[in-house]
Amino acid sequence: MTKEINDFPAGVRDIDTKEDGNPAVQLFGRRFFADQPTLEVLSEFFLVMTSRKIIGEEACDALLPAINRLRNWPEYNNQLRYEPKAKLNLKLFAFLGSSRLETRHETHRKHCEYLWSLLKDKIDSDDMEQEEILRILSNLFLGFWGNGAQRTWCAQTFLPFCKGVMSTETIWNESEARRNSNVNSWEYVIDHFNDFFSVNKHRFLARGGEMLYLQICNALRQDTVKIQDWLSRREGLGLTEEEANPETLHAALQKALSRFLKQTPATLNELANFIDTGVESDSAASSDQSSGRPRIAECGWCAEDSWREGYLFAIELKRILTADIDPLEAIELLEIACAMQVMRSLAAQSYRFTSVESAPDGFDYRVLISDSNGTNRRIKEFSRLSISEICHEIHRAIRIPEIKDKIESNEQAKKYREADDRYGHKLYLRIGKSIGLIVPRRGAGTRVVVTDKILRYLVLSLVSTKRMTFDTLKRQIELHHGLVFEESALREARNWVDRNNLLDSSDHADAHLEQMLDASGVLVKLSDSCSLVKNPYCTECAR
Image (cartoon, rainbow, N blue to C red):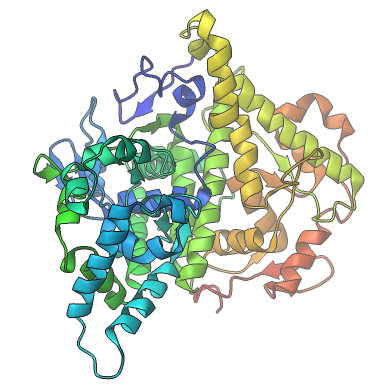
């Protein structure tokens, strides 16, 4: 049976290009990439969200496009476009002093000195020297450094904690600067911005965040009846009335995102904007415009079938963003949310297309959790096997005839090697290892564990409106992420149908989870056979 791989937005995919021609990209979308750190997936996600967006001919300044606009997306070849900022002056001010010496070009150092002199002239203080104030401000923004310590200052990123620091990937073309003998001033550099800087290579902000944003747009544009029909087949997801309706979920998520971004004092946003453009605006004009018009970035596309994962992701984001926690802790949990969404997307889409029968939901996979110490050798081995099965399905999925037959036979070996390494099952493993869900980071014996931080994420994103029983939480974790704690639960996975006789109901196989919840202070034991799990960071749950 031929299976059609649909894209959203429709008509954007082009398998004749190098990027979309990769077999894994054809299945999953443009693109999840092994070299993109999970924090920068989150940063790119917020960059798209906080930037001015264009759909067709219509501009959108809101964090999410209006629900009517999503449901009336232009039918063909209308990418989501957005206008990201480079924030060169702000990055120079914050990161140059801590960057590696060999990455600091002479023109960058001179402009940084000039920028400091302009800023000093704007400071009026009788209590402290201007130089000391600037040093404090520089260290303040350096404290919000996110990633890229080995890169040039302009290619580094901030934690995505406020709109004022959201910036696009900007790469300094060192080789071009060396070849050009005229590169002796910052003015020359920015006048020839496109020669000396690259903003569209997608090396670090490699489109993963764009994909997650498109998945949410794709999910929220679905008809309410379609969502209700899907939820009726996924009984036990535990959604509230608000979450089960895409229109009210859209409004709630928009509100939660806005609330999160407003938690940062407005002064920080104002300072960031003032440092970047308030005293020297030529850099912003050159980096953020092309031929006098705003510089446009184009999102790729996601798998149209991924609206199911996107819907769960939207719910989980909303719950994390409305929790009563510190903004920086929220960023850590949001990073985990993005990583687990990438893993869920790879697994679900793969299982859709490797099923003999039509299985549109794609959630018929399970991964067994082992205790962190690996003391139960049987559970440890089944955990390893369950991970191996996921990787096998991802490997199989990108080789279905609908994809493989479109690739020239003499190119297949090369393209599939790249697909496996960068976009397929090795990406799945790398993402899991980066957040501590899959261990060890190196070596044999790969298995799945739950760390304290991942457990905290699961509690905050799944215990949403009331206390729930311990067994209900386990079921929620299974339905949202395919993670299970007893080997007998592997019977729910398609891969284990022929091996059900090997699976037993292990006594207290979930004891390590109960112990972790108890140590975290969120477990309420009612009896030896019944416990409740509460979310103390949700006001409604704490009642």
